[in-house]
Length: 183
Image (cartoon, rainbow, N blue to C red; front, side, top):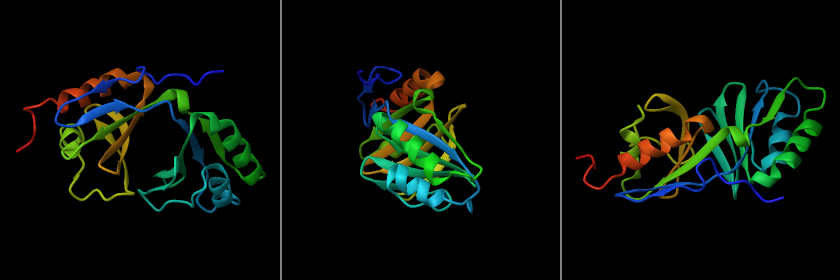
């Protein structure tokens, strides 16, 4: 079975910053109380990281765990690793109240890269990008839709619902058009 394409088939836009779809990625929403038995063990088994602090994302290679709310974590991994990760979570948290759901096909993921990548996102999101540190995850909005984003390397990873993927990509691409830089 071949790996599915992203929501937009790998859309790309070039401007003063580059915008590209990087999905599909494997994603699991894991909900549990922060002190739930086996939670840290489950995250370690699923993605190889520890639990992140509030508004943080911890990355280990091509896997990550992001804090989404006091009882919710976003686990990111290769698309083909989701089934094994769900099994590992189930074993580690057996007997503990939790919810682990594959949301891979319900999300779209984009990279905005370049020296002025923050300007593209600043046009869409009420975030102070000058103070957004590497490893900090923000749940916010991109224009009028829910999004999560974090700084990584020379750019940002942006996650949104698949149902609004075209809208978000077009916003990002328009925000990166040459001549529209912020001054």
